[in-house]
Image (cartoon, rainbow, N blue to C red; front, top):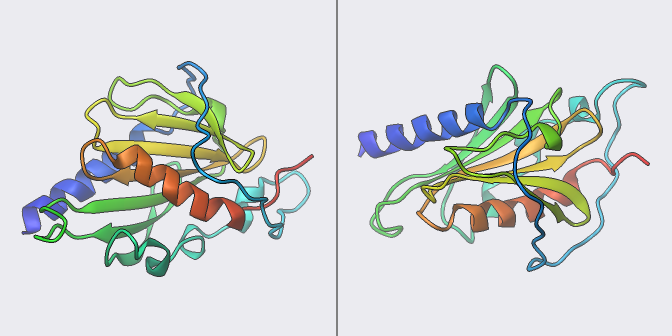
Length: 188
């Protein structure tokens, strides 16, 4: 049982690290199948600082928010080279056909939606979540997907999912719609 969990954690870490460079590729598209709402205003950073600095990824989501998907463990706070990360895990079990799910929220204080890189040779597409600009980077394998949402002109938050084949982007989009209203309002 430990090996599948370790494999999911390793893939989640790889996903977090591969979706964070400064190159932009892909073609624009939109997703309009999820209802929208307006963003609440959260405390902003000091003048000239990224708004993301005022955010703690572990405060933006809870296991209760993910209860519809299963009994998640976490949050687990992680410090990655280019992000502040919080992770929730649904361990593999008979109930979820042995597939676990890893949900990472990665706050990237110095990376924008436009700088999102493709994952695993896939393409990055642009979209919106509640009118907030996003970049979506699915892995062609269908098990990984990252939805990056703009925080301000210099930072973003990524919702990274490692999950069941063919469902990861749907899960990432669902989680993005939960998190987005908790982000600071976009600067005018």
